[in-house]
Image (cartoon, rainbow, N blue to C red; front, side, top):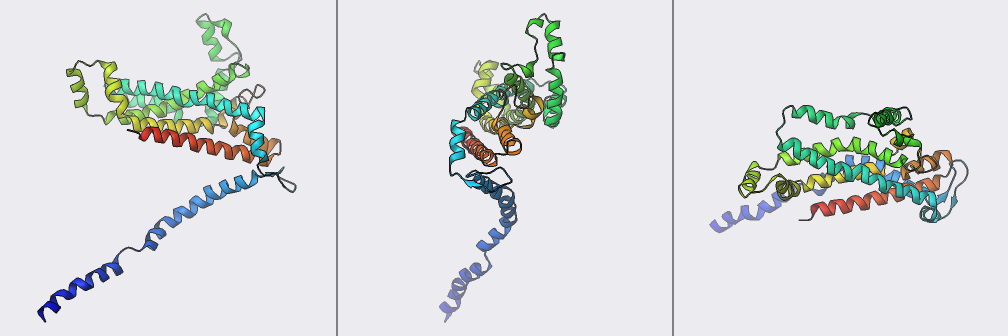
Amino acid sequence: MADTLVAEPATTAPARRGRLGPSPWHALAYVAPALVVYATFVLYPLGRAVHLSLFEWDGLTLATFVGLGNYVEVLTDADLRAAFGHTLVLIVFFALLPTAIGLVLAALLTRARLRGLPFFRTVVFLPQVVAMVVVGVAWRQLYAPDGSVNDLLSLVGLGGVARAWLGDPTFALPAVGVIGTWVQTGLVTLLLMAGISRIPDQLYEAARLDGAGPVREFFAITLPSVRAELAVALTLTVIAALKTFDLIYITTGGGPGNRTSVPSYEVYNRAFRLGEVGSAAAVGVTLTVIIFVINLAVAWIGERR
């Protein structure tokens, strides 16, 4: 009789925990609002773009199903191939150069213990808070034949290389890329400064005791410690390079000729100027896949130990 009384709570406890524990429906209820918003504003437009890319459609008349014809055009059209090639050039200016410059700036500003560091942070980050349209208009004036860039070159005796930078077929794309470097360097610098500030000073002190100089400290301690921040910076800047549209639209309009055209500008040009909605959708979907693959590769490299 005593054994029966003792055993009873052990058999009823699991049943009570099962009734009172969290249900899978509770977790679904928590994520459902965000999932609905994500599906409405991201997944549905993406699916709709994929659907449109399978048709030849001018946006007004009946669409004609062409299967993968628009994607074949993306691969075979010389102008579109050039646009994707221009994006690769912009990645150098928007991602690689800002990362290299930002890494050096972050190391100097953080390790040098400069006075007025908040002021330097604000100045470096300032281009990020200016609207890209304003940036484009300002740099268009700087690059003008009678702009400040040519005035500065003439002042230092290099007036012979002065030109209409945004109208030059050779220098227009690098000129736009320099604007991207100026804009993205501040973001990268701040991200890396946050990472470097978390490195314990004891590591640097131990390295100095072992005879390491500033350069060796940078490559042995600083660079490996900010690997995660570098991956984030590269991800954000590569996305900025691949999807840039407003800067191209404001500064060059894709010209001269198509020397500065990029995929995102081609989406706008084909959809709203040429009436080739299906082709524009195919370019957009292809660009989305490229962005996904590149950033997946950057994240994978950043997480490797």
